[in-house]
Length: 142
Image (cartoon, rainbow, N blue to C red; front, side, top):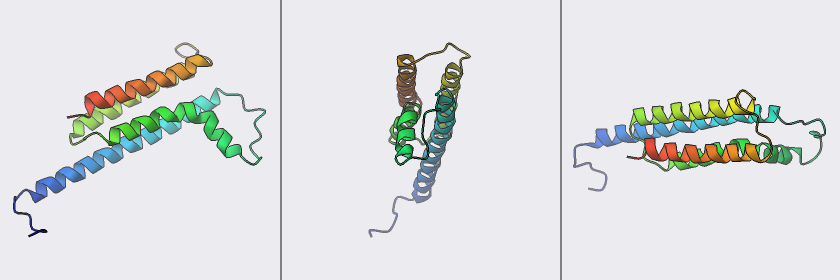
């Protein structure tokens, strides 16, 4: 009796699991794409004339240099994966929301809205992380 579905709703549970998996994949891909775009925008602000990309250990240095830009997306992706996402609309609204926040951060980094330097950039990315986590809590939790 261990492999027999006696409740009669096996198809509904399987469909629900497939939707949840599809929503998680969509949200993860959105984080990866938006994070990659923002890394390129962020690194375009940095002067890399003295950066020796041909030396040993250059890749670790590049990861460390770009960390402030991709860490909010990593934290948000991990946070959003743990939340229950069965509603397609909630996942779509979440993706749209993080896209708008990312566009706002990109505009700030490109100088269209202010021009933060040093600590201001770190505070910008910290605020972005907090906004992403709150959006996930509001839009994805049921």
